[in-house]
Image (tube, rainbow, N blue to C red):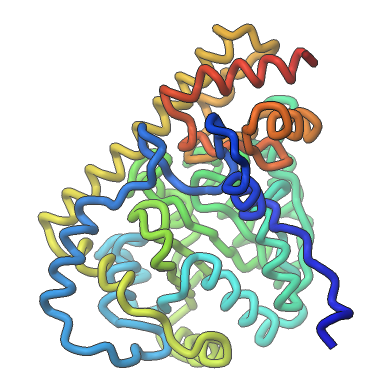
Length: 399
């Protein structure tokens, strides 16, 4: 029976990493997968996480199953990080958080929930969005549509177009937004624009769905919550998928969370009972170790301070690489104005490179970039930026 099965195409992002690993070139550069790298090109273990691991090991007494939604302590830590300890959503108890296997696991549980409990709803995705978003919802049987988000002419937010699209969406539909560091464009709304988007979503009767995978990588841990908190008006409903892969460096631990906010505690208890059904029929209950690391860091004043400093260092390095990248592009004579890259935030940049140029970079120079032209700026270092920009200059000039 298996002989009739055809090979699947490689994943648009992770498949490039497979090709990168197979490439024998000693000068190869991987700017595709969304993994933070330091100035040496390595993905570090944060010192705060390392120390938390020692504490977890010392006090661990069992490896029994966690509850279906995971540890209550982890859920409380996640909510306080996103909303703030005294926020109305937390104090009223109208939010419920489940520990999921990464942000992707959170998205899939949310998709299953929408399909089962909101079967008439369509999910509206930004155009462009993370390539795995439509695949996750399609696998769950949830219909999706797109609304304009990025203005390629200005390399900025198409705010008026997005706002106009929201005002035409059917009430009862779900609208996905990126909490910060929009993937792939790196373009976020301003605080005022967030407020106007939140007003329009509320007035239209839509359910906001926030993919919040990069808290701390744009402007700061607190500052990056501006969009989330703009959506949290009293009585409003909300879905949030968060991840600690980036800001804790816990990529292989797969630590995510799914938080739903309802109008009151009684409603969220009912909603959470259905979320637990989705989890039970998927992975049953979550792994413990990564979430315990996050809970330990956030619950320890010394480690929390150390972690915030480490996040700031990662954020500052990314900002620095953006500036260096633009300066080097100019120095190497690459045609065009790339100053917009310094206005983008987070790990990703829409470079403006065409699919043909991206393919030429891979074939001629062993430089791996997603076909859309999205670059992981964190993969740029002082050592490889010169060669990278020389190669870009060559393919843009057609040589």
